[in-house]
Amino acid sequence: MLEHVLHMTAASPFVQVVIIILATFVLEDAATLITAIQVQLHVVSLPTALMALYSGIVLGDVGLYGLGALAACWPPARRWIDMPGISHQRQWLSRNLFRAVFVSRFIPGTRLPLYTACGFFRAGLQTFTLATALATLLWTTGLFFLALKIGAFLLAHLGAWRWAGIVGFAALMILSGRVAARIRKNHTP
Image (cartoon, rainbow, N blue to C red):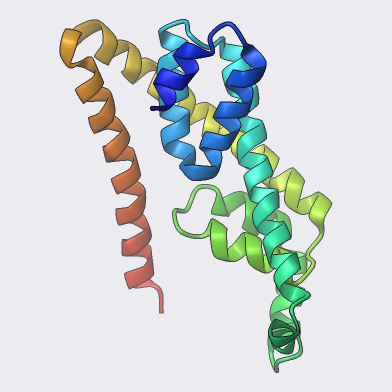
């Protein structure tokens, strides 16, 4: 569906940016893959695609931080702020904020709890945003260019079946992230 909408809006880069940003809020990796394919098909320009992906992902991450900060304003949740041992964890998070946020971009299943916790405990928003922006530049750029190469191969060699290959590749990316998160969850004490 995303590729159809991007194709229909090829004459309006602004609309394409908005659509890509919104798509990153749903599934970042799938939006990255589909956007790379659309660049390969010359429907979206490379600069427009990357700018929209970076913006959408960082905005989504800051949005999770904001949800955590909003939750801290809710009276029943505020009791967790003063629980025994929480100040130690808050101090650890403050000392290791950049590293924790940066590394979490590469470990499936860690961003939602970490980013909302950062907002909940009012960890430094500037440091948080810098860490997520730099990690997004690395991760999304690598994933985008991998998808661009694989997409070029699929488009060139699968003919009428190219979309089945692209859907299969997207499903593989999504499932591998879920499997990695589940394995990590089962092996953490």
